[in-house]
Length: 224
Image (cartoon, rainbow, N blue to C red):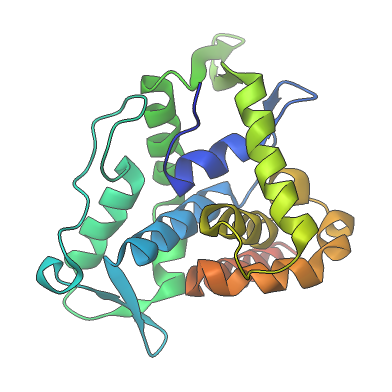
């Protein structure tokens, strides 16, 4: 099975713990997925940075933007979360800062990406109630080898440690994983070991990564 084409979809899969066969708990996953959607929109030319704020680029100026795609393997177009974020941005009369868009609707972002991956048969989602009261959702990847290949792609770009000639998708995923403290880069020790390489990947991903890092730092300070 091929991985989903979208950054949010691939980032979600990279948050899966293959050793424990479950999703790693991450308080920042929703923000990271929205940052991935912003990164994807920027790389598509649908949005741009304007003095630290997100500006919508008219389709006439950037060419025809990808249309929202229907869930499914290999479906062309824009993923559901990126489409939703683009609609949110277009509904605002004035540009807002990148962090504003990273912080919004985090739980909805997780559900949107999860449901799209389930519809495309990349993951299996089971809903149940613990003690018949507490709702619980279990996610299981359908193709472990595909997720391993995704991890290998990110590991490779971090081993090289240079953005020159790097695959922009892999470089963006590495930067997002580091800033969002997700998956293999959840621990401080893991991030510190590759901190200079992560810094080299960040310009490829763009301003959403710095906004994500600031949002994570803020949430940590609020919980301290």
